Amino acid sequence: MTRKKTPPTPPRGTPEIPAPRPTLWFALGIAGALSALWLLGLGLWRLIGALI
Image 1 (cartoon, rainbow, N blue to C red):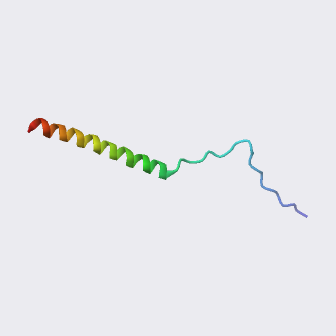
Image 2: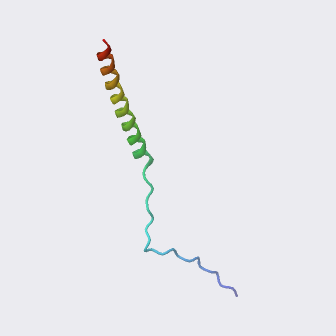
């Protein structure tokens, strides 16, 4: 008679670190791009105003 070996249980003391949500990074990227575009727009308008 052979016994079935039970698989070793992982230690419970180390909780899994959850990965950062991609939607959060996506939202941050969109916000950063919009703010950069806005700042570039302000700079362009100031340049145009100085030239005119």
